[in-house]
Amino acid sequence: GENVEQHPSTLSVQEGDSAVIKCTYSDSASNYFPWYKQELGKRPQLIIDIRSNVGEKKDQRIAVTLNKTAKHFSLHITETQPEDSAVYFCAANAGRGAQKLVFGQGTRLTINP
Amino acid sequence: EAGVVQSPRYKIIEKKQPVAFWCNPISGHNTLYWYLQNLGQGPELLIRYENEEAVDDSQLPKDRFSAERLKGVDSTLKIQPAELGDSAVYLCASSLAGSEKTQYFGPGTRLLVL
Image 1 (cartoon, chains in turn purple, blue):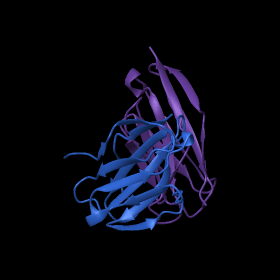
Image 2 (image 1 turned 90 degrees about the vertical axis):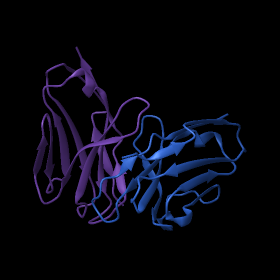
Image 3 (image 1 turned 120 degrees about the vertical axis):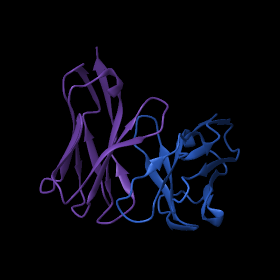
């Protein structure tokens, strides 16, 4: 079945700098890759997603890139702000068209003022 | 629009006791998911419903866990008897039917088994 690996597990950056979180997946048939943000004690919330028919997607300060050949995708946050501090999870669907999501282990991002 | 609602938010029980969690999905969402989230880990799918039918329960420990979604709306997840290792956050999510649909999560129920 699908396996998703996420790195790093913790990331600390200065406010205003960029942050990058990377994930790899194992099932080449996966075609949907969402990213969720979870603040302490809160529910996971979708921040951006990408489908396998595109290589990059951007929404203001957040962008996601996908390399299908290498089976990895990354989250990029530019001009980081204190409110970006949270745990970020990547996920991949378990095969083409599958609704089941397999999540990575999470990255705790801390923005230092 | 109201989001996914879960109750209770917190539950503390002694081992071997039963416990139940309730979830009300977003109106119109046919698909409902129950996830387990251990501390410091990503959510892991326990069961997925399409309307009232459980279509993926391969990761549900059926010896002690059960779930139902009567009438295809609200759902309950039950553990009987609870074990110490069941301490975790139980998340409910819902989505529209079909692939690549956004899953919206509830706030979760934090369970502590003593």
